[in-house]
Amino acid sequence: MAAGSARAVERSYPASTEDVAAGFDDGGLAVGERIVGESILPQLAVTLSSKGFQARASWKRLHGRIRGLLPLVSQYAQYALFPLAVLLLWWYASAAAWLPSNILPSPGTVLASFYDLLQSGEISEHLGISLWRVVQGTALGVSLGLALGVALGASPAFESWIGPSFRILVQIPSIALIPLLMMVLGIDDTLKLFIMAKACVIPLALVSSDSIRNIPPAYLETARVMRLRGKTLYWRIILPGALPGIATGLRQGVAHVWISLVAVEMLASAEGIGYLMTWSRQIFQLDVVLVCVALIGITGFALDYGLHRFELRCLKWRGAE
Image (cartoon, rainbow, N blue to C red):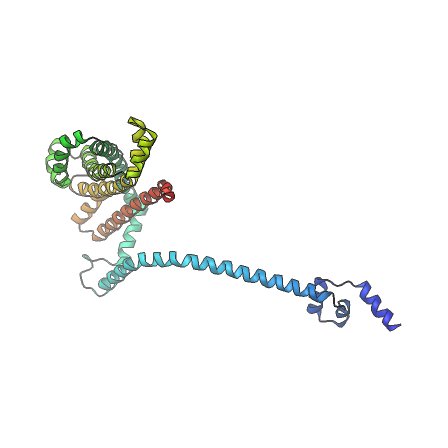
């Protein structure tokens, strides 16, 4: 009779993993009777094994993501190490009064001045004017620089006639031309546009011409096999082959545009970030001068970094070579 009751209990309560969990949670004897039978043990082992496998897989994924982020974190830490060291040295020098506070303001004073300039809109106005000038100068300089670079690199006759004179012009600093150009062009935006265009044309034309003359021989052999001539040769072979050098020249040109603009704004302008820095120096507001210096550096870095990312995106096809 007792054996029949046990079998009835076994038949009325089929074994399952939920019963196991409930049995372990409640700790009750009656529930333990429900899972009587050897058939539940393999199922229990499979369930626990699968849960352990999932936990190990999740941990491996998390560990892989952390290991993938470590090189990026290390790289950015290296980038920030030198600026942080300079900032700490600046803070210590101002706190120790190595120089008078009106000559070397503290980082807190400079930050407060930046906040005031931002609230008043003065810094945004001058920086916006300078950036718009950069857009204009870059557009003109890139157009002229590419045309001149292609002509110098593709035409030996043009190189022999124009090349020497152009290389003489390269050796003349743009700042040396400002006094003469001020007499001819005044101090309006025409002067700044000329200086920026010259600053962009020179590196872009030189690098582009060298890149065109140094096209990989495999590209030229491909053109001969395909019997490409004229415009098709330039659009399909010459320009794509010279594109990495042209991208480098473009980055150099934009950097020179920004530097030359700040210089000419300091000498001959009534607005712009360079003018604001010069005016602040004249009225002995060196905290504003330091704000302008920091903005000039950050803006130049942002321009170069943006062009670098654009260059990598445009030259993805070279990874297949």
